[in-house]
Image (cartoon, rainbow, N blue to C red; front, top):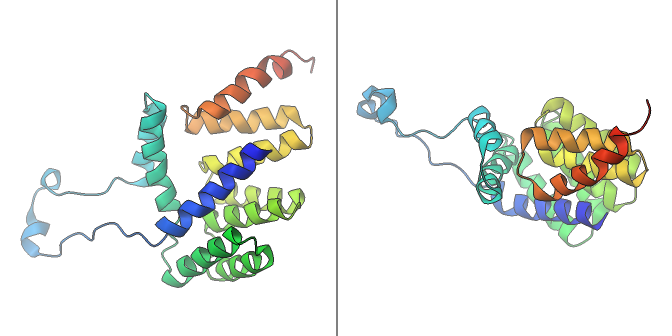
Amino acid sequence: MRFFASILILSLSLASHTAGAQEPARPKDPKEQARPPHARPRASTLDELFERLGKAQTEREAEGISSLIERRFARSGSDTADLLLNRAAEAFGKKDYPLAIELIDRVLVLQPNWAEAWYKRATVFYQLDDPVGAMADLHRALKIEPRHFNAWTGLGHILMASDDKARALAAYRKVLAINPQMSDVKTIVNRLGPEIDGQDL
């Protein structure tokens, strides 16, 4: 379970630094607007990033793409919600979990369809030894964004801790379907797969 905790803590830490990052605004100059599409610089869409992630040839390449995806996940479109989630991350870092929960609750009132906020609250519930609450929030995050590979990873770890290995394996395989280069998850699947797949149904 240390692996799960370290992933979640790292994710929260990254969010505190990246949630406020903004991609450069496109120029509004009419001449720029008149340029042919192939001549205009543009940011990749989330769908394009996931496509690139699925085709990444190395773990290093995948890490760079997944970092871009996580930056997108960390932006809600509301400056207020983003600020509150950053403050929740700071509270989490100080192990003030009740404050982190309170702040994320406020975020979810403002942005109930923000998958990342549900995911982050799940990490806090996990630290509070509330796997039921954590799992519920992970399911909410995945309902909103089924490609949230960190949420699938967290769900897999919680299921493993409850000895539900078959469902854990299914969750880990979801991770690899989205992000095939996650070596830690590959290791788990390679170890767990033969054990579960060989069981009589």
